[in-house]
Image (cartoon, rainbow, N blue to C red; front, top):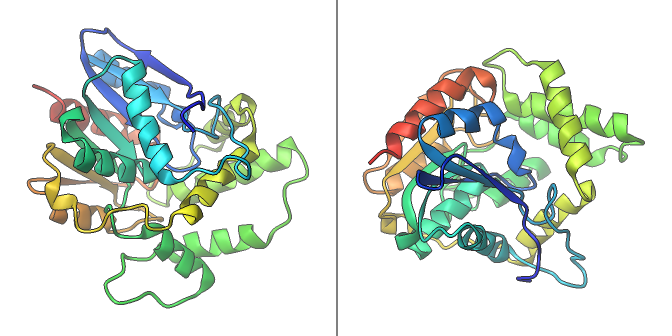
Length: 292
């Protein structure tokens, strides 16, 4: 599976300290907002973002003919670093990208200068199974991670039962509705900006339906995540969660407890997206964390 083309782009001077941005499952790299990336580069960082395989402008895979697992998606992180000539980098990760970042920090500590995880779950916590049990109305075993908020569960239950969208407009409307849910209730939602973003996501995707392969990859190897290894993370770690996180509420505190010396930061009003209101606070924290 090493022949899948991965789209990436970089900003800033090659001599600046590198930050690799790793987005979440089924998500394009441009969900790292341009303005946020600009703040990081203005702060003296070389910033790289990329589209996971089967998202955006990266290559798509015939999953039935060439199945892959989340190990392959994780190994794409190394491929992007290698292509940009990076022996090591500061990893800044969102949602399931945080699982990838944690895994890389355990597996190849020499390649991780620092780790920042935003709106993520602890590696080995089985958050995918927690979400699936919540959606199916199944009880959670004792010791499971906290469930998503009720509005998250209700939204995706409805989505799973709905017919596929009929056309581009309907598909984008659905993508905006999903962004509104993930945005949370702590900050105003800018529907016009959301439409511009989702139109851009729709129009730059080679095959928008290919993102479903990420779910198939999770099912192909459900035990992808090593358990009980976060104490091995050596990289300085910053863990960030929004006060209105709908998908993984309270998960960041668990990450911070398990990684030695990790710092926990709660961003007021933020949900599971990166709206303009939080760019300055997030960028300042990340620039401080990646300094020196």
